[in-house]
Length: 606
Image 1 (tube, helix red, strand yellow):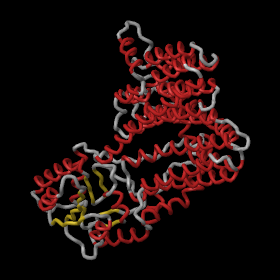
Image 2 (tube, one colour):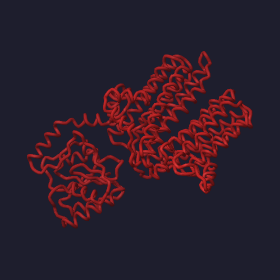
Image 3 (cartoon, helix red, strand yellow):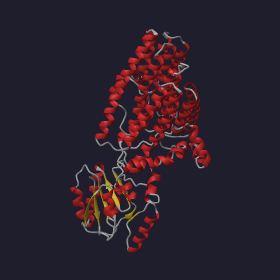
Image 4 (spheres, one colour):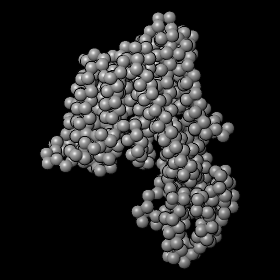
Protein backbone atom coordinates (compact mmCIF):
# COMPACT_ATOMS: atom_id res chain seq x y z
CA UNK A 1 0.00 0.00 0.00
CA UNK A 2 1.36 3.47 -0.84
CA UNK A 3 2.11 5.79 2.06
CA UNK A 4 1.29 9.49 2.40
CA UNK A 5 3.11 11.54 5.04
CA UNK A 6 1.20 14.62 6.17
CA UNK A 7 3.58 17.39 7.18
CA UNK A 8 3.05 20.66 9.03
CA UNK A 9 0.36 21.80 11.40
CA UNK A 10 -3.00 20.03 10.97
CA UNK A 11 -6.02 22.19 10.13
CA UNK A 12 -9.30 21.52 11.97
CA UNK A 13 -12.01 20.34 9.61
CA UNK A 14 -9.59 19.53 6.78
CA UNK A 15 -10.57 16.64 4.52
CA UNK A 16 -7.06 15.94 3.28
CA UNK A 17 -6.54 12.79 5.34
CA UNK A 18 -9.82 11.28 4.15
CA UNK A 19 -9.07 12.28 0.57
CA UNK A 20 -5.71 10.53 0.67
CA UNK A 21 -7.24 7.39 2.17
CA UNK A 22 -9.88 7.37 -0.59
CA UNK A 23 -7.00 7.23 -3.07
CA UNK A 24 -5.58 4.17 -1.35
CA UNK A 25 -2.86 5.78 0.77
CA UNK A 26 -1.88 4.76 4.27
CA UNK A 27 -1.68 8.15 5.99
CA UNK A 28 0.91 9.05 8.61
CA UNK A 29 1.65 12.44 10.18
CA UNK A 30 4.91 14.24 10.89
CA UNK A 31 5.20 17.29 13.08
CA UNK A 32 8.44 18.51 11.49
CA UNK A 33 10.91 17.77 8.71
CA UNK A 34 13.05 15.51 10.90
CA UNK A 35 10.10 13.27 11.74
CA UNK A 36 9.07 13.31 8.08
CA UNK A 37 12.56 12.08 7.13
CA UNK A 38 12.29 9.27 9.69
CA UNK A 39 8.90 8.21 8.39
CA UNK A 40 10.17 8.41 4.80
CA UNK A 41 13.07 6.10 5.63
CA UNK A 42 10.65 3.62 7.20
CA UNK A 43 8.52 3.20 4.05
CA UNK A 44 9.59 0.05 2.11
CA UNK A 45 11.63 0.92 -0.95
CA UNK A 46 9.29 -0.91 -3.33
CA UNK A 47 6.29 1.25 -2.38
CA UNK A 48 5.14 4.68 -3.52
CA UNK A 49 5.47 7.46 -0.96
CA UNK A 50 4.02 10.98 -0.94
CA UNK A 51 4.64 14.02 1.22
CA UNK A 52 1.60 16.27 1.48
CA UNK A 53 1.18 19.53 3.36
CA UNK A 54 -1.57 19.19 5.99
CA UNK A 55 -2.90 22.61 4.93
CA UNK A 56 -3.57 21.42 1.36
CA UNK A 57 -6.88 22.49 -0.17
CA UNK A 58 -7.92 21.16 -3.54
CA UNK A 59 -9.86 18.68 -5.59
CA UNK A 60 -9.48 14.98 -5.04
CA UNK A 61 -8.80 14.54 -8.75
CA UNK A 62 -5.92 17.02 -8.49
CA UNK A 63 -4.42 14.76 -5.82
CA UNK A 64 -5.11 11.73 -8.01
CA UNK A 65 -3.33 13.28 -10.98
CA UNK A 66 -0.40 14.41 -8.88
CA UNK A 67 0.08 11.39 -6.63
CA UNK A 68 -1.16 8.20 -8.34
CA UNK A 69 -0.08 8.31 -12.00
CA UNK A 70 2.15 5.23 -12.46
CA UNK A 71 4.04 6.58 -15.47
CA UNK A 72 6.34 8.99 -13.65
CA UNK A 73 9.02 8.23 -11.01
CA UNK A 74 8.55 11.69 -9.46
CA UNK A 75 5.53 13.97 -9.65
CA UNK A 76 4.24 17.00 -7.82
CA UNK A 77 1.41 19.49 -7.50
CA UNK A 78 1.36 22.53 -5.18
CA UNK A 79 1.65 21.22 -1.63
CA UNK A 80 2.37 17.59 -2.54
CA UNK A 81 5.22 15.56 -4.00
CA UNK A 82 5.39 11.81 -4.66
CA UNK A 83 8.01 9.25 -5.59
CA UNK A 84 7.79 5.75 -6.96
CA UNK A 85 10.63 3.29 -6.22
CA UNK A 86 12.66 4.63 -9.17
CA UNK A 87 12.49 8.15 -7.70
CA UNK A 88 12.92 7.34 -4.01
CA UNK A 89 16.68 7.91 -3.93
CA UNK A 90 16.38 11.41 -5.37
CA UNK A 91 13.59 12.30 -2.91
CA UNK A 92 15.58 10.92 0.03
CA UNK A 93 18.62 13.01 -0.92
CA UNK A 94 16.49 16.14 -1.21
CA UNK A 95 14.95 15.46 2.20
CA UNK A 96 18.36 14.96 3.79
CA UNK A 97 19.61 18.28 2.41
CA UNK A 98 16.42 20.00 3.57
CA UNK A 99 16.98 18.77 7.12
CA UNK A 100 20.66 19.66 7.13
CA UNK A 101 19.75 23.17 6.02
CA UNK A 102 16.79 23.69 8.31
CA UNK A 103 17.98 21.64 11.24
CA UNK A 104 14.87 19.46 11.09
CA UNK A 105 12.62 22.29 12.20
CA UNK A 106 9.45 23.65 10.68
CA UNK A 107 10.35 26.34 8.12
CA UNK A 108 8.13 28.82 6.34
CA UNK A 109 6.26 27.45 3.36
CA UNK A 110 5.39 23.93 2.37
CA UNK A 111 7.95 21.15 2.90
CA UNK A 112 6.68 19.42 -0.25
CA UNK A 113 7.23 22.58 -2.30
CA UNK A 114 10.74 23.05 -0.88
CA UNK A 115 11.57 19.45 -1.77
CA UNK A 116 10.28 20.04 -5.29
CA UNK A 117 12.55 23.09 -5.61
CA UNK A 118 15.53 21.05 -4.39
CA UNK A 119 14.79 18.21 -6.83
CA UNK A 120 14.56 20.54 -9.81
CA UNK A 121 17.71 22.37 -8.72
CA UNK A 122 19.50 19.02 -9.03
CA UNK A 123 18.20 18.64 -12.57
CA UNK A 124 15.85 15.81 -11.59
CA UNK A 125 12.81 15.46 -13.84
CA UNK A 126 9.58 15.93 -11.89
CA UNK A 127 6.24 15.55 -13.66
CA UNK A 128 3.74 18.35 -13.04
CA UNK A 129 0.32 17.37 -14.36
CA UNK A 130 -1.80 19.96 -16.13
CA UNK A 131 -4.58 20.72 -13.65
CA UNK A 132 -6.64 23.14 -15.72
CA UNK A 133 -9.58 24.33 -13.64
CA UNK A 134 -8.79 21.97 -10.76
CA UNK A 135 -7.60 23.55 -7.52
CA UNK A 136 -4.44 22.57 -5.62
CA UNK A 137 -3.14 25.09 -3.11
CA UNK A 138 -1.59 25.57 0.34
CA UNK A 139 -3.33 28.66 1.75
CA UNK A 140 -1.23 30.81 4.05
CA UNK A 141 -4.06 32.25 6.15
CA UNK A 142 -7.78 31.65 6.95
CA UNK A 143 -8.99 34.08 4.30
CA UNK A 144 -6.95 32.39 1.58
CA UNK A 145 -8.22 29.02 2.81
CA UNK A 146 -11.84 30.13 2.52
CA UNK A 147 -11.20 31.44 -0.98
CA UNK A 148 -9.56 28.16 -1.99
CA UNK A 149 -12.45 26.15 -0.58
CA UNK A 150 -14.89 28.29 -2.53
CA UNK A 151 -12.86 27.74 -5.70
CA UNK A 152 -13.07 24.00 -5.09
CA UNK A 153 -16.84 24.20 -4.66
CA UNK A 154 -17.18 26.17 -7.91
CA UNK A 155 -15.62 23.44 -10.07
CA UNK A 156 -17.23 20.03 -10.58
CA UNK A 157 -14.39 17.61 -9.92
CA UNK A 158 -16.15 14.66 -11.56
CA UNK A 159 -17.04 16.62 -14.70
CA UNK A 160 -13.41 17.58 -15.16
CA UNK A 161 -12.33 13.99 -14.61
CA UNK A 162 -14.81 12.70 -17.21
CA UNK A 163 -13.77 15.31 -19.75
CA UNK A 164 -10.07 14.59 -19.28
CA UNK A 165 -10.73 10.87 -19.88
CA UNK A 166 -11.23 11.68 -23.58
CA UNK A 167 -8.21 12.25 -25.81
CA UNK A 168 -7.74 15.91 -26.68
CA UNK A 169 -6.89 15.01 -30.30
CA UNK A 170 -9.08 12.46 -32.02
CA UNK A 171 -10.93 11.86 -35.26
CA UNK A 172 -14.31 13.37 -36.12
CA UNK A 173 -16.23 10.10 -35.85
CA UNK A 174 -14.67 9.21 -32.51
CA UNK A 175 -15.10 12.70 -31.09
CA UNK A 176 -18.74 13.18 -32.01
CA UNK A 177 -20.16 9.68 -32.40
CA UNK A 178 -18.35 7.61 -29.77
CA UNK A 179 -16.78 9.66 -26.97
CA UNK A 180 -19.97 11.47 -25.86
CA UNK A 181 -21.21 8.21 -24.34
CA UNK A 182 -18.15 5.92 -24.15
CA UNK A 183 -16.72 8.06 -21.33
CA UNK A 184 -19.72 7.11 -19.20
CA UNK A 185 -19.13 3.45 -20.02
CA UNK A 186 -15.55 3.97 -18.84
CA UNK A 187 -16.79 5.42 -15.55
CA UNK A 188 -19.22 2.54 -15.14
CA UNK A 189 -16.33 0.11 -15.62
CA UNK A 190 -14.15 1.98 -13.12
CA UNK A 191 -16.84 1.90 -10.45
CA UNK A 192 -17.15 -1.87 -10.85
CA UNK A 193 -13.45 -2.52 -10.61
CA UNK A 194 -12.89 -3.44 -14.25
CA UNK A 195 -9.43 -2.77 -15.66
CA UNK A 196 -8.49 -1.31 -19.06
CA UNK A 197 -6.88 -4.63 -20.01
CA UNK A 198 -10.16 -6.44 -19.42
CA UNK A 199 -12.01 -3.95 -21.62
CA UNK A 200 -9.29 -4.26 -24.28
CA UNK A 201 -9.72 -8.03 -24.25
CA UNK A 202 -13.51 -7.67 -24.52
CA UNK A 203 -12.99 -5.43 -27.55
CA UNK A 204 -10.80 -8.10 -29.16
CA UNK A 205 -13.34 -10.87 -28.59
CA UNK A 206 -16.14 -8.67 -29.95
CA UNK A 207 -14.14 -8.02 -33.13
CA UNK A 208 -13.33 -11.71 -33.52
CA UNK A 209 -17.03 -12.54 -33.24
CA UNK A 210 -17.67 -9.85 -35.86
CA UNK A 211 -15.11 -11.52 -38.14
CA UNK A 212 -16.80 -14.88 -37.58
CA UNK A 213 -20.17 -13.36 -38.51
CA UNK A 214 -18.66 -11.91 -41.70
CA UNK A 215 -17.20 -15.33 -42.50
CA UNK A 216 -20.71 -16.82 -42.74
CA UNK A 217 -21.17 -15.12 -46.10
CA UNK A 218 -24.83 -14.32 -45.42
CA UNK A 219 -26.49 -10.92 -45.46
CA UNK A 220 -27.52 -11.35 -41.83
CA UNK A 221 -23.98 -12.26 -40.93
CA UNK A 222 -22.63 -9.18 -42.71
CA UNK A 223 -25.10 -6.90 -40.90
CA UNK A 224 -24.22 -8.45 -37.54
CA UNK A 225 -20.52 -8.12 -38.37
CA UNK A 226 -20.88 -4.40 -39.06
CA UNK A 227 -22.76 -3.79 -35.81
CA UNK A 228 -20.28 -5.81 -33.78
CA UNK A 229 -17.31 -4.04 -35.38
CA UNK A 230 -18.69 -0.69 -34.20
CA UNK A 231 -19.32 -2.20 -30.74
CA UNK A 232 -15.71 -3.36 -30.67
CA UNK A 233 -14.56 0.14 -31.54
CA UNK A 234 -16.68 1.61 -28.73
CA UNK A 235 -14.92 -0.73 -26.31
CA UNK A 236 -11.60 0.18 -27.92
CA UNK A 237 -12.24 3.84 -27.07
CA UNK A 238 -13.51 2.91 -23.63
CA UNK A 239 -10.33 1.12 -22.55
CA UNK A 240 -8.20 4.21 -23.12
CA UNK A 241 -10.76 6.45 -21.46
CA UNK A 242 -10.88 4.09 -18.50
CA UNK A 243 -7.09 4.22 -18.24
CA UNK A 244 -7.16 8.03 -18.21
CA UNK A 245 -10.18 8.20 -15.88
CA UNK A 246 -8.65 5.93 -13.25
CA UNK A 247 -4.95 6.45 -14.15
CA UNK A 248 -4.52 2.71 -14.70
CA UNK A 249 -1.58 2.86 -17.07
CA UNK A 250 0.73 -0.11 -17.59
CA UNK A 251 3.38 -1.40 -19.98
CA UNK A 252 1.34 -4.51 -20.70
CA UNK A 253 -1.84 -2.48 -21.23
CA UNK A 254 -0.22 -0.19 -23.81
CA UNK A 255 1.07 -3.20 -25.74
CA UNK A 256 -2.29 -5.01 -25.61
CA UNK A 257 -4.18 -1.93 -26.76
CA UNK A 258 -1.89 -1.31 -29.71
CA UNK A 259 -1.47 -4.95 -30.73
CA UNK A 260 -5.12 -5.88 -30.45
CA UNK A 261 -6.12 -2.98 -32.72
CA UNK A 262 -4.11 -4.52 -35.53
CA UNK A 263 -5.27 -8.07 -34.74
CA UNK A 264 -8.92 -6.99 -34.78
CA UNK A 265 -8.75 -5.19 -38.09
CA UNK A 266 -6.77 -7.87 -39.92
CA UNK A 267 -8.87 -10.71 -38.50
CA UNK A 268 -11.92 -8.85 -39.81
CA UNK A 269 -10.32 -8.64 -43.27
CA UNK A 270 -9.84 -12.42 -43.18
CA UNK A 271 -13.45 -12.89 -42.08
CA UNK A 272 -14.69 -10.80 -45.01
CA UNK A 273 -12.54 -12.79 -47.44
CA UNK A 274 -13.87 -16.08 -46.07
CA UNK A 275 -17.43 -14.76 -46.25
CA UNK A 276 -17.02 -13.70 -49.86
CA UNK A 277 -15.78 -17.17 -50.81
CA UNK A 278 -18.64 -18.88 -48.94
CA UNK A 279 -21.38 -16.54 -50.14
CA UNK A 280 -23.65 -17.05 -53.09
CA UNK A 281 -21.21 -15.53 -55.57
CA UNK A 282 -18.19 -17.52 -54.33
CA UNK A 283 -16.09 -14.39 -54.84
CA UNK A 284 -12.33 -14.73 -54.17
CA UNK A 285 -11.19 -11.45 -52.60
CA UNK A 286 -8.14 -12.75 -50.70
CA UNK A 287 -5.84 -10.65 -52.89
CA UNK A 288 -7.82 -7.53 -51.97
CA UNK A 289 -7.79 -8.48 -48.29
CA UNK A 290 -4.03 -9.01 -48.34
CA UNK A 291 -3.57 -5.79 -50.31
CA UNK A 292 -5.55 -3.87 -47.69
CA UNK A 293 -3.41 -5.33 -44.91
CA UNK A 294 -0.18 -4.52 -46.78
CA UNK A 295 -1.28 -0.96 -47.49
CA UNK A 296 -2.46 -0.31 -43.95
CA UNK A 297 0.70 -1.74 -42.40
CA UNK A 298 2.93 0.30 -44.70
CA UNK A 299 0.96 3.43 -43.77
CA UNK A 300 1.66 2.79 -40.12
CA UNK A 301 5.36 2.17 -40.75
CA UNK A 302 5.52 5.53 -42.55
CA UNK A 303 3.98 7.16 -39.47
CA UNK A 304 6.29 5.40 -37.03
CA UNK A 305 9.48 5.96 -39.05
CA UNK A 306 8.79 9.65 -39.63
CA UNK A 307 8.05 10.24 -35.97
CA UNK A 308 11.12 8.34 -34.78
CA UNK A 309 13.35 10.22 -37.22
CA UNK A 310 12.13 13.63 -36.11
CA UNK A 311 10.87 13.55 -32.53
CA UNK A 312 14.29 14.42 -31.02
CA UNK A 313 15.87 16.11 -34.05
CA UNK A 314 17.41 19.55 -33.59
CA UNK A 315 16.59 22.60 -35.75
CA UNK A 316 13.43 20.72 -36.61
CA UNK A 317 11.38 23.38 -38.39
CA UNK A 318 10.19 23.92 -41.95
CA UNK A 319 7.82 26.21 -43.90
CA UNK A 320 5.60 23.20 -44.60
CA UNK A 321 5.28 22.43 -40.90
CA UNK A 322 4.53 26.09 -40.18
CA UNK A 323 1.74 26.06 -42.79
CA UNK A 324 0.32 22.88 -41.28
CA UNK A 325 0.30 24.47 -37.83
CA UNK A 326 -1.43 27.54 -39.27
CA UNK A 327 -4.14 25.39 -40.88
CA UNK A 328 -4.67 23.64 -37.55
CA UNK A 329 -5.71 26.98 -36.09
CA UNK A 330 -8.66 27.17 -38.50
CA UNK A 331 -11.50 25.10 -37.08
CA UNK A 332 -13.00 23.47 -40.17
CA UNK A 333 -9.64 22.55 -41.70
CA UNK A 334 -8.68 20.59 -38.59
CA UNK A 335 -11.56 18.15 -39.03
CA UNK A 336 -11.14 17.89 -42.81
CA UNK A 337 -7.43 17.12 -42.43
CA UNK A 338 -8.12 14.53 -39.75
CA UNK A 339 -10.88 12.82 -41.73
CA UNK A 340 -9.13 12.54 -45.11
CA UNK A 341 -6.32 10.46 -43.59
CA UNK A 342 -8.95 7.85 -42.66
CA UNK A 343 -8.12 7.49 -38.95
CA UNK A 344 -9.21 4.32 -37.22
CA UNK A 345 -12.67 5.61 -36.28
CA UNK A 346 -13.61 6.77 -39.77
CA UNK A 347 -12.05 3.67 -41.32
CA UNK A 348 -13.86 1.19 -39.10
CA UNK A 349 -17.16 3.03 -39.50
CA UNK A 350 -16.76 2.92 -43.27
CA UNK A 351 -15.90 -0.80 -43.20
CA UNK A 352 -18.83 -1.57 -40.91
CA UNK A 353 -21.39 0.27 -43.05
CA UNK A 354 -20.08 -1.13 -46.33
CA UNK A 355 -20.06 -4.66 -44.88
CA UNK A 356 -23.70 -4.35 -43.86
CA UNK A 357 -25.06 -2.89 -47.10
CA UNK A 358 -22.70 -4.01 -49.90
CA UNK A 359 -20.37 -6.92 -50.70
CA UNK A 360 -16.89 -7.77 -49.39
CA UNK A 361 -15.39 -6.91 -52.80
CA UNK A 362 -16.90 -3.42 -52.76
CA UNK A 363 -15.84 -2.98 -49.15
CA UNK A 364 -12.22 -3.81 -49.96
CA UNK A 365 -12.13 -1.74 -53.14
CA UNK A 366 -13.44 1.37 -51.36
CA UNK A 367 -11.07 0.72 -48.46
CA UNK A 368 -8.08 0.38 -50.80
CA UNK A 369 -8.95 3.55 -52.70
CA UNK A 370 -9.49 5.53 -49.50
CA UNK A 371 -6.34 4.25 -47.80
CA UNK A 372 -4.26 4.80 -50.95
CA UNK A 373 -5.38 8.43 -51.11
CA UNK A 374 -4.73 8.89 -47.39
CA UNK A 375 -1.29 7.30 -47.71
CA UNK A 376 -0.39 9.53 -50.66
CA UNK A 377 -1.59 12.64 -48.82
CA UNK A 378 0.28 11.96 -45.57
CA UNK A 379 3.46 10.68 -47.20
CA UNK A 380 3.64 13.64 -49.61
CA UNK A 381 3.24 16.07 -46.73
CA UNK A 382 5.98 14.40 -44.74
CA UNK A 383 8.32 14.31 -47.72
CA UNK A 384 7.79 18.05 -48.20
CA UNK A 385 8.48 18.68 -44.53
CA UNK A 386 11.64 16.60 -44.68
CA UNK A 387 12.96 18.35 -47.77
CA UNK A 388 12.28 21.88 -46.47
CA UNK A 389 13.53 21.47 -42.92
CA UNK A 390 17.15 21.56 -41.81
CA UNK A 391 16.77 19.01 -39.06
CA UNK A 392 19.82 17.23 -37.70
CA UNK A 393 18.97 13.65 -36.82
CA UNK A 394 20.39 12.11 -33.68
CA UNK A 395 22.20 8.81 -33.25
CA UNK A 396 19.17 7.53 -31.34
CA UNK A 397 16.92 8.28 -34.31
CA UNK A 398 19.32 6.54 -36.70
CA UNK A 399 19.40 3.50 -34.39
CA UNK A 400 15.60 3.40 -34.24
CA UNK A 401 15.34 3.51 -38.05
CA UNK A 402 17.93 0.75 -38.35
CA UNK A 403 15.91 -1.38 -35.93
CA UNK A 404 12.72 -0.66 -37.86
CA UNK A 405 14.52 -1.72 -41.06
CA UNK A 406 14.63 -5.30 -39.67
CA UNK A 407 17.79 -6.30 -41.51
CA UNK A 408 18.70 -9.98 -41.15
CA UNK A 409 22.04 -11.81 -41.11
CA UNK A 410 22.60 -11.61 -44.88
CA UNK A 411 22.13 -7.84 -45.05
CA UNK A 412 24.15 -7.32 -41.87
CA UNK A 413 27.08 -9.31 -43.28
CA UNK A 414 26.99 -7.43 -46.57
CA UNK A 415 26.72 -4.09 -44.74
CA UNK A 416 29.85 -4.85 -42.72
CA UNK A 417 31.72 -5.60 -45.95
CA UNK A 418 30.45 -2.44 -47.65
CA UNK A 419 31.55 -0.29 -44.72
CA UNK A 420 35.14 -1.37 -45.35
CA UNK A 421 35.11 -0.34 -49.01
CA UNK A 422 36.89 2.95 -49.83
CA UNK A 423 33.99 4.23 -51.98
CA UNK A 424 30.69 4.66 -50.16
CA UNK A 425 27.29 5.91 -51.38
CA UNK A 426 26.66 9.61 -50.65
CA UNK A 427 25.70 10.18 -47.04
CA UNK A 428 22.04 11.10 -46.76
CA UNK A 429 20.99 9.18 -49.90
CA UNK A 430 20.10 5.89 -48.22
CA UNK A 431 16.52 5.76 -49.50
CA UNK A 432 17.66 6.21 -53.11
CA UNK A 433 20.22 3.44 -52.65
CA UNK A 434 17.47 1.01 -51.57
CA UNK A 435 14.81 2.14 -54.06
CA UNK A 436 16.13 0.54 -57.31
CA UNK A 437 16.45 -2.93 -55.78
CA UNK A 438 12.98 -2.79 -54.27
CA UNK A 439 11.41 -1.51 -57.49
CA UNK A 440 13.10 -4.18 -59.65
CA UNK A 441 12.04 -6.90 -57.21
CA UNK A 442 8.37 -5.89 -57.44
CA UNK A 443 8.57 -5.56 -61.25
CA UNK A 444 10.21 -8.96 -61.66
CA UNK A 445 7.64 -10.64 -59.44
CA UNK A 446 4.77 -8.91 -61.27
CA UNK A 447 5.92 -9.37 -64.87
CA UNK A 448 7.44 -12.85 -64.80
CA UNK A 449 5.30 -16.00 -64.79
CA UNK A 450 5.16 -18.18 -61.70
CA UNK A 451 8.26 -20.39 -61.40
CA UNK A 452 10.62 -17.95 -63.10
CA UNK A 453 14.14 -17.57 -61.71
CA UNK A 454 14.24 -13.84 -62.49
CA UNK A 455 12.55 -12.82 -59.19
CA UNK A 456 15.31 -14.74 -57.36
CA UNK A 457 17.96 -12.65 -59.12
CA UNK A 458 15.96 -9.50 -58.35
CA UNK A 459 15.72 -10.54 -54.70
CA UNK A 460 19.50 -11.00 -54.61
CA UNK A 461 19.94 -7.48 -55.99
CA UNK A 462 17.39 -6.21 -53.47
CA UNK A 463 19.40 -7.83 -50.68
CA UNK A 464 22.55 -6.03 -51.85
CA UNK A 465 20.91 -2.61 -52.19
CA UNK A 466 19.11 -2.95 -48.86
CA UNK A 467 22.44 -3.81 -47.19
CA UNK A 468 24.05 -0.79 -48.84
CA UNK A 469 21.20 1.40 -47.56
CA UNK A 470 21.83 0.48 -43.92
CA UNK A 471 25.63 0.34 -44.16
CA UNK A 472 25.79 3.93 -42.90
CA UNK A 473 23.55 5.65 -40.30
CA UNK A 474 20.08 6.57 -41.55
CA UNK A 475 20.35 10.31 -40.97
CA UNK A 476 19.42 11.69 -44.38
CA UNK A 477 16.37 13.86 -45.02
CA UNK A 478 14.36 11.00 -46.55
CA UNK A 479 15.95 8.04 -44.79
CA UNK A 480 12.83 7.51 -42.69
CA UNK A 481 11.34 6.10 -45.92
CA UNK A 482 13.75 3.14 -45.85
CA UNK A 483 11.77 0.94 -43.37
CA UNK A 484 8.41 1.41 -45.17
CA UNK A 485 10.14 0.72 -48.49
CA UNK A 486 11.41 -2.60 -47.11
CA UNK A 487 7.93 -3.45 -45.81
CA UNK A 488 6.35 -2.70 -49.19
CA UNK A 489 8.96 -4.78 -51.03
CA UNK A 490 8.67 -7.82 -48.76
CA UNK A 491 4.90 -7.84 -48.36
CA UNK A 492 4.31 -6.95 -52.01
CA UNK A 493 6.53 -9.79 -53.22
CA UNK A 494 4.66 -12.33 -51.11
CA UNK A 495 1.31 -11.00 -52.37
CA UNK A 496 2.30 -11.05 -56.04
CA UNK A 497 3.93 -14.50 -56.00
CA UNK A 498 0.95 -16.01 -54.17
CA UNK A 499 -1.44 -14.47 -56.70
CA UNK A 500 0.73 -15.75 -59.57
CA UNK A 501 0.60 -19.27 -58.12
CA UNK A 502 -3.13 -19.19 -58.88
CA UNK A 503 -4.06 -22.19 -56.75
CA UNK A 504 -6.57 -22.56 -53.98
CA UNK A 505 -5.09 -21.61 -50.62
CA UNK A 506 -2.03 -19.70 -51.84
CA UNK A 507 -3.38 -16.23 -51.02
CA UNK A 508 -4.78 -17.22 -47.59
CA UNK A 509 -1.37 -18.73 -46.79
CA UNK A 510 0.30 -15.52 -47.93
CA UNK A 511 -2.15 -13.54 -45.78
CA UNK A 512 -1.09 -15.59 -42.76
CA UNK A 513 2.62 -15.10 -43.47
CA UNK A 514 2.32 -11.34 -43.93
CA UNK A 515 0.18 -11.12 -40.78
CA UNK A 516 2.86 -12.96 -38.76
CA UNK A 517 5.68 -10.80 -40.12
CA UNK A 518 3.64 -7.61 -39.67
CA UNK A 519 3.07 -8.57 -36.04
CA UNK A 520 6.86 -8.76 -35.60
CA UNK A 521 7.26 -5.32 -37.17
CA UNK A 522 4.54 -3.78 -34.99
CA UNK A 523 6.10 -5.40 -31.93
CA UNK A 524 9.41 -3.74 -32.85
CA UNK A 525 7.67 -0.37 -33.07
CA UNK A 526 5.98 -0.71 -29.68
CA UNK A 527 9.22 -1.76 -27.98
CA UNK A 528 11.01 1.28 -29.39
CA UNK A 529 8.16 3.62 -28.45
CA UNK A 530 8.18 2.19 -24.92
CA UNK A 531 11.97 2.81 -24.63
CA UNK A 532 12.48 -0.95 -24.31
CA UNK A 533 14.81 -1.21 -27.30
CA UNK A 534 14.44 -3.41 -30.36
CA UNK A 535 13.70 -7.15 -30.20
CA UNK A 536 16.76 -9.30 -29.43
CA UNK A 537 19.19 -9.93 -32.29
CA UNK A 538 18.63 -13.69 -32.10
CA UNK A 539 14.95 -13.21 -32.92
CA UNK A 540 15.66 -11.13 -36.03
CA UNK A 541 18.31 -13.63 -37.15
CA UNK A 542 16.10 -16.65 -36.53
CA UNK A 543 13.31 -15.35 -38.77
CA UNK A 544 15.75 -14.16 -41.43
CA UNK A 545 15.23 -10.41 -41.56
CA UNK A 546 13.23 -8.81 -44.36
CA UNK A 547 15.81 -9.63 -47.03
CA UNK A 548 16.23 -13.26 -45.91
CA UNK A 549 12.51 -13.94 -45.95
CA UNK A 550 12.15 -12.27 -49.35
CA UNK A 551 14.98 -14.35 -50.81
CA UNK A 552 13.49 -17.53 -49.35
CA UNK A 553 10.00 -16.86 -50.75
CA UNK A 554 11.33 -16.13 -54.25
CA UNK A 555 13.48 -19.29 -54.19
CA UNK A 556 10.52 -21.39 -53.04
CA UNK A 557 8.37 -19.97 -55.84
CA UNK A 558 11.08 -20.81 -58.39
CA UNK A 559 11.69 -24.37 -57.18
CA UNK A 560 8.27 -25.62 -56.05
CA UNK A 561 4.99 -26.29 -57.80
CA UNK A 562 2.14 -23.93 -56.97
CA UNK A 563 0.59 -26.44 -54.57
CA UNK A 564 3.92 -27.11 -52.86
CA UNK A 565 4.53 -23.35 -52.65
CA UNK A 566 1.21 -22.95 -50.82
CA UNK A 567 2.23 -25.57 -48.26
CA UNK A 568 5.63 -23.92 -47.85
CA UNK A 569 4.03 -20.49 -47.24
CA UNK A 570 1.72 -22.05 -44.65
CA UNK A 571 4.59 -23.72 -42.80
CA UNK A 572 6.66 -20.52 -42.92
CA UNK A 573 3.72 -18.51 -41.57
CA UNK A 574 3.23 -20.92 -38.66
CA UNK A 575 6.94 -20.97 -37.78
CA UNK A 576 7.32 -17.18 -37.90
CA UNK A 577 4.10 -16.66 -35.93
CA UNK A 578 5.14 -19.10 -33.19
CA UNK A 579 8.63 -17.63 -32.80
CA UNK A 580 7.59 -13.97 -32.70
CA UNK A 581 4.48 -14.51 -30.58
CA UNK A 582 6.26 -16.56 -27.91
CA UNK A 583 9.12 -14.06 -27.61
CA UNK A 584 6.79 -11.06 -27.70
CA UNK A 585 4.46 -12.40 -25.02
CA UNK A 586 7.43 -13.43 -22.86
CA UNK A 587 8.96 -9.96 -23.14
CA UNK A 588 5.85 -7.91 -22.43
CA UNK A 589 4.65 -10.05 -19.55
CA UNK A 590 8.10 -10.03 -17.93
CA UNK A 591 8.37 -6.27 -18.47
CA UNK A 592 5.01 -5.79 -16.76
CA UNK A 593 5.88 -8.07 -13.85
CA UNK A 594 9.39 -6.63 -13.54
CA UNK A 595 8.12 -3.14 -12.80
CA UNK A 596 8.96 -1.54 -16.13
CA UNK A 597 7.83 2.09 -16.35
CA UNK A 598 4.12 2.29 -17.09
CA UNK A 599 3.20 3.78 -20.42
CA UNK A 600 -0.01 4.61 -22.19
CA UNK A 601 -0.44 4.27 -25.91
CA UNK A 602 -2.71 6.99 -27.24
CA UNK A 603 -3.18 5.04 -30.43
CA UNK A 604 -2.22 5.87 -33.98
CA UNK A 605 -4.43 8.32 -35.87
CA UNK A 606 -4.46 5.86 -38.77
